[in-house]
Amino acid sequence: GAGVSQSPSNKVTEKGKDVELRCDPISGHTALYWYRQSLGQGLEFLIYFQGNSAPDKSGLPSDRFSAERTGGSVSTLTIQRTQQEDSAVYLCASSRGEGGYTFGSGTRLTVV
Amino acid sequence: KQEVTQIPAALSVPEGENLVLNCSFTDSAIYNLQWFRQDPGKGLTSLLLIQSSQREQTSGRLNASLDKSSGRSTLYIAASQPGDSATYLCAVRRGNAGNMLTFGGGTRLMVKP
Figure (cartoon, each protein chain N blue to C red):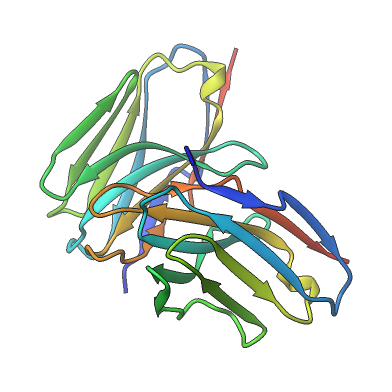
């Protein structure tokens, strides 16, 4: 596609439920990143994919968080047993080679 | 560990002013630096990308410079407009092969009519 697409744009979930966030990167972009932005905070790196593998998952805050990427394209970030502190905007970005990063519009997650 | 700092954290100016946003980083071994704009409740829009071998990039009323040896970048906005009101973020990329971006805390800009 023309840009990075994320779905859903907004998600409200009850504490303890699992959620899946989806990212569809720009076609041909081999690198894909997940970031988190909490209210009033900066951007926090979560995980990086090169193709389908994740060489750097150092930013995942706990084992409740996991991500996968299939076909070198779509990625899913899964949060299990959501907690209120998981409420944030989750941003996905993709890049190719020495080009810059292109971000999606994000998924605003609210845990109630 | 790379640290990126943006000064000022917030800025309010009257329409028409030229302004400079500052970004500094602690590790000069960067691959490139990117300036983004973020509107409230929205994602990030890329403004300018400067490779480590470049000194500046220009796009319309925006000009970004890079002094890698001193760990600094500036974003110059000419003839500011109310539509420029947003948060501006700089981010540095450590190396090729997809290394992550490290972001500054941003400068929140308000341009008053």
